[in-house]
Length: 368
Image 1 (cartoon, rainbow, N blue to C red):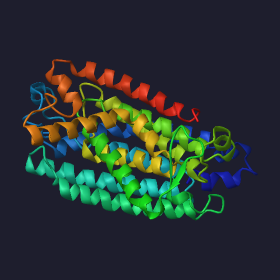
Image 2 (cartoon, rainbow, N blue to C red):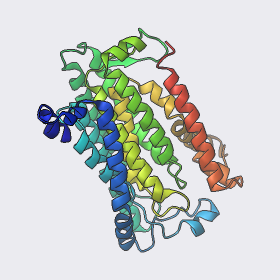
Image 3 (cartoon, rainbow, N blue to C red):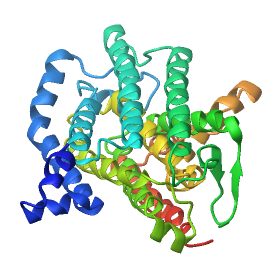
């Protein structure tokens, strides 16, 4: 909005020329989202507490300490993230960019799915919300719409090759770009839905999911900026996606909103993000990876989310097939809790793992 209002006035007031630069608007988006979180956080948390007398329902089969430490803490704190993220993006992004609207659509839609899931948990006073089937079908429907939109937007520009919209890039190889045709849509749906649920599974300890999410968002802000700039893309031998650079503003806003939320989510948490936050954040990062043609790189940068998801798959498969459990409890962070690790120890060590994997993912930009 500010881009459209102020940049045209640059001839009358020179400093408004700054709005042409993605770096300036990305910085502005991050600071704005952070300030919104700081200014509205106490009121949002107080309102959530007033609506949730007993706080988020705690799993009875979970780590014993959770019943004592986390009882009464309100959930749906993802609303604070979404509010700061969406307002900041609308203020600082180029709203003529279709990729921005697709990303906002996925973020808001997944947040709505998460909201209904959280609401049902609260009304039922149970740790299980929407049925897994209903939630998955809703996620697939939203992801399908987004995947088709991304495909059409990418194919619809005069600069992008006509086949780029259905192409799948492979990291480490500079000339490998697989044209999947319309099979690209189910692949994109899998990436977006998988990323959403992976972040959701990771969200189990204070601060555990939000920091790796910010790390991933920061990485994709950098990737989007490079992919959207033909000079940098050609130099690094990346596949240039015209218009994708604008997503750096969204990613920066996500980092700012995440920092603001972490202020209240740091141990001991004053609020949990709930599915409202985790599903929307994961879906947003997933669709950005699809737009920038870095789906496989997301699996590296978001490797911590992948590990958490794989731990659940292994646990369920092993128990159904053999009657035995691979881990003391899944997802993986609960396994270490059962082994006696303190919550801050697990969280910080997982942050370190996420940072190392992010560096490894970014290295693919140069290792071609």
